[in-house]
Length: 394
Ligand code: KG4
Ligand code: ZN
Image 1 (cartoon, rainbow, N blue to C red):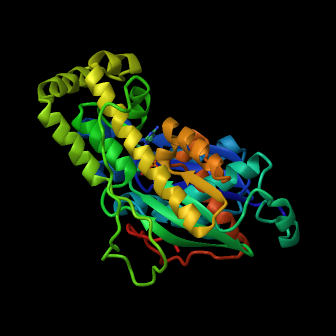
Image 2: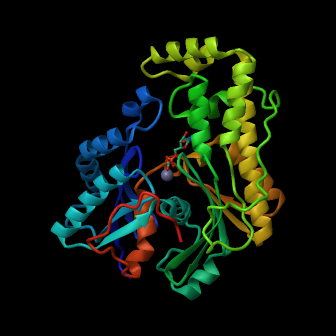
Image 3: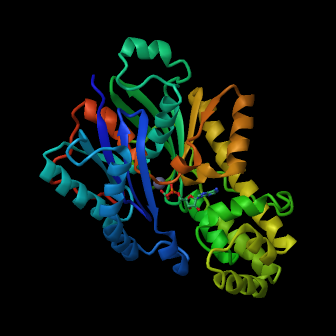
């Protein structure tokens, strides 16, 4: 099979991204334009603003991805675009542009689920390092060289919009997924963002909580996370077997209650104002504005989140007899989460793989990589497909 160069386009949330990936195993270019600065004054992503920012950025971002790759519109073999889940208006910008390009260039277009993209970011990077067999290896070779990868793999996709556990396996060229856990309310990244916001630490919350936690006592405040024993009434009947669901709105409320009980509101307001007055606050600025009590609270929150994510994922791995874990999505960039996963998984004899930090958060290389098996299977999108804000992964 000759090499295939796929141009991936991603616009599901607040990153406009384009990348060229060769045969699902080599990143040739990877351009990410973050809209964080546009959304920061509002303390979160504003959907309409996101659509407008995508519209401004999409053409230059795609042009740069092609130029960086030494490719042209004509030389690429196919296009891939995120269909969902995500913000409908934001998705439509990427999809409309990808459709127009595919139509004008007469190239195949592949629609990709964003969550599948996050899972493939792990596969892409491992292949790039020479691990796992590439998709176009013959099945017999793949079986012998796939020594690290035991199917099914258990993938934790944990980001600002999602907290999902999937059993994933490849049969022939096709990947199959079964959801065995999801959040009943807030996603883990959303909890990081909301807690940061209520503590006057700005947006996005995950990266700054990650850094500040290293300066606090994680045992200072006890947070208990809900163990969900009852089935989710909203779960579709096609979901069978044991479930490993998450719930993070309670811990956010517990942090809020802690702030109220300890009368922290005035100092939070002062911090919010002080940080808002700094164009691009550095870690030292945050540290100057945080007393030890706040650092302890942040570290305790992170410790509880990490304990819950790792504990539930390992329980699912045990119950399903899984030997390989993937941990991916924006929250997979978290230092404590990585260290804890590595330590606890090793104790149980499990292999755990993370994407590098730039590939953990939203990007288009993962979309182009996830598209490659579909390219081989000629699983191309019809020109009348649309954005699917609540798209599920199956
Ligand atoms: O995957 P992503 O870029 O976008 C979504 O698909 O949601 O994830 C963004 C989320 C945000 O909630 C952000 O706060 C969180 O990932 N995040 C982190 C870290 N870096 C980003 N959370 C915890 N620790 C981090 N280091
Ligand atoms: Zn994402």
